[in-house]
Image (cartoon, one colour):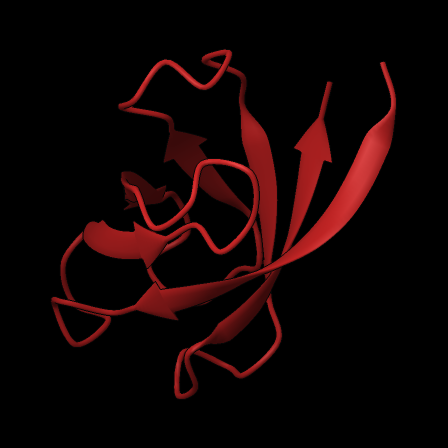
Amino acid sequence: MTAKAVIYELTDTHDCKGVVYELTHTHDCEGVLYYLTDTHDCEGVVYELTDTHDCEGVVYELTDTHDCEGVVYELTEYT
């Protein structure tokens, strides 16, 4: 399993209070939407990403680089 870092733009649709985020994938599966589950109540840096468009249906590890205030996150894709 190899790790590949890719940049994604994440739109927080619940003001860091909910658990569902809308993620725009800017590589490979051009512009499709993903649902992101925040597993650490916006206090941690690990998120579970569910691929809803069958782009291999893998799990991703997301690092929050803006303390839940920005829109750019670093996503490590495990393939």
